[in-house]
Image (cartoon, rainbow, N blue to C red; front, side, top):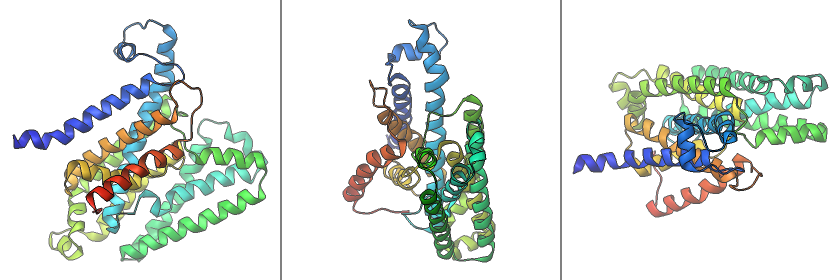
Length: 338
């Protein structure tokens, strides 16, 4: 009976993820029945041949992007909240999203010649990756000199504020059409990736997930304080650098391919803790991965406005759907914990 109770959260999260994945594939401007969706996925000929093209070429890539992006951001948020022992920390506290935004803003709004590059398949992703990588190197350099995590958190927030200010100046001095292009990018997009890009995002996610599992012991020790962690033989400096690298890999890749996505990294770790009821990272990491994927699929399904050709910005939906849920669970449990 106790074993069944322990398995219940995993059965619930796994079933929810499969259900939301199928619903995400089925709903949209063209509704495809779930049984036909399953038939196409298992290689059978669909009743309508167009459904197969819609499902394989567009919706399946989008759904897989949601799984990888949601899981990556949630894992990054979990590690940042543990590292800084702050329930309001997320992967963007390192300034990676701000760095990516600045690089894309420079590409879009400073050079008319660069506009010809924007139509390239990897141009925006490349610019965002360069921006995230530069900020990552700055944060890494700071982490090597500053031993206090609170100071590192404040420096990350200041880097984010400074880069956001430069982006605001670029927006103020640029053409309206360039501002519009940049604004659309900041909304986030789960449906703009092709199969090679989805494959690359998946490989990066697996690298970040593997590194996260290897860091589960230092993360558990970190919750009990620096002295306890050192007594267990944890090299705090090396563990902190590896946590920053893992978060940067996970969050930076999502920002590069999908744009800056809000809310998921901050809120999903709390939702995972409420479902699984543990602070053990060996359990929390897979639980947060499943929860992040499910929440992102839910948000994308709502953003598609089933039955309509209109697609709402994913960033608006992540906050609109998730914030009331988090407020409700916090009020119900009367506290949040790391």
